[in-house]
Image (cartoon, rainbow, N blue to C red):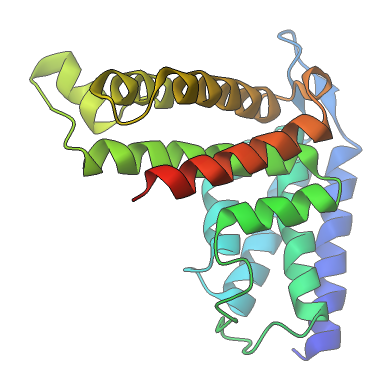
Length: 223
């Protein structure tokens, strides 16, 4: 495919995502879903595109493949945001190879991608992505500071700990202070609201503050 073909294909994928959003419905638990058939077509086609253009090791492909696993409206919006980011990369001439060799400066990490999505008014996708970065960073800190493992249930929690559990344990160990712990708790809460379709419980300005806060927190504590 040439650049024009790649742009047209990304536009087709965005249309598939938007068509899936038109099928939204609310279940008994007030969770917003879209048609599994429409979602499945959008997911499969998008993964094929991202694999061919960027490769399976690129953040676009990995994030799309790992996170878009349920036909929630929130994840569909997130997926559309990723495809829009990929489209922008192609349009801007940042793509250096159709096999996935891309400029190292472009979206070097998920926080840059989240910033782009926020600028494109995809606050929900941005919030989930920022939250994913935060969760991974917490687990990296968990490993870096040699958090202890034990037998039984505690061992399971140590191998696959929940982010809020890790947050509490890192604060107890003095990796960071109580204020950071409270901020992390708030950011994780916002991330969960975005992931579960509670879009009216936060706004774009709060996501922007979350982005700034998480960026500073990660930079300060990763040393």
